[in-house]
Length: 143
Image (tube, rainbow, N blue to C red; front, side):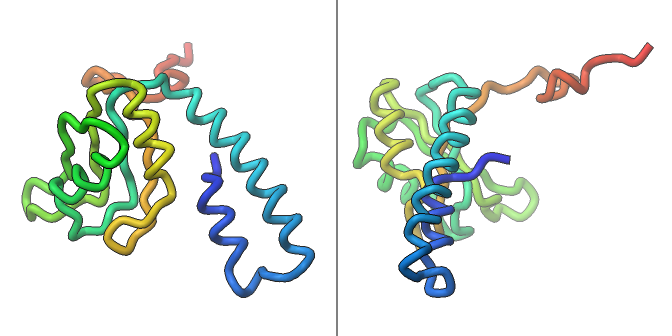
C-alpha cells in the first residue's frame, strides 16, 4: 500500500500528534511516503490524463475543470457518475493538452482541498481489454 506524502503529513500534524519530538517523526514519515509515492507514480507511465479520487459528491465536471485549469490547458474534465442514480461516484478524469501541463496539474492538486474534501491526483492507467484482469499475476493458470 502506498502512502501519499501530503496525507501522512496532514494526519501526523493534527493536534493529537503535535509536539517537539513529532516534527522529526513527521519528516521521516513524509520522506518514506514520498519514496513510496514516487515508486507508485513510476508504476503508471506519464499520461496527459489524470485520475482524480476523493471528490466531494457535489463536485461537478465544470468545477473540476476550473480547479485544474490553473495549472495548464485542460482539454476535458469529467466526474464519473452512477448510471442509475446520476450521483457522483467520487472520482473523475482530467485530460490536459500536454504532458508538462498534466505533471503540473498532478503536483499542484494532489492532496489539496476541492469543495471541502482532500483529493488525490495521479496519472491514469490505461484501460485493460474486457475479459482480462488489471493485475497480470492473476491471469496465470495453475496447471
